[in-house]
Length: 240
Image 1 (cartoon, rainbow, N blue to C red):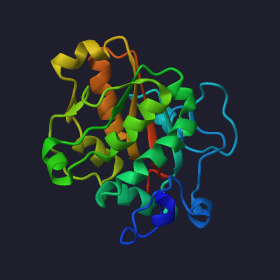
Image 2 (tube, one colour):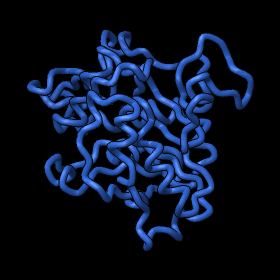
Image 3 (spheres, rainbow, N blue to C red):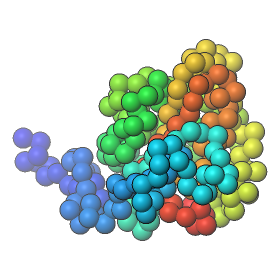
């Protein structure tokens, strides 16, 4: 009856139109998304031209190992996915979060099989107050529900307000988030001996994920993996 009164709209409809009530994209938008289905680096999740040996890492990971162990992304961050992600991040389109969680339940299924806790990459309280919600948390919550893992929204916190990462080089991003994350003493017991899956919207160089992973490992986590909606194809593209 509700569909008769309010016909469903795809989630890629313009945000000024009627509120979408279906959990999917239009066929045109779906066809443009570059989902990552082929072989990937087990470390950073970057697409590879051919399958690497089990446990092998791409040259980038070999040259600069990450603090997290494995990463997976649902799709590439490009012109097709950028608009959807920015709608979730800045335009109050929280209806997109369950869709992204579904994508990640498939893309990160290997990681979810091993995980104990699902935790979002945190925002600093001042930025959270300005934005009113953490887009990573909005994706992590339904992802935890789909996987059956415990949702842990506050085991890692951003203890230092940092400038935006957009436009910074890889080394600049690492310096920007150095010492920015920590695990509260009250949450250390929840982390100790557990494997944590960090969830975020976009992976560029991995500097933010590394900062969170170091904090969790220092608090006693046995391992940290990362799941993101999208990743840039090359770390040279630092415009986000």
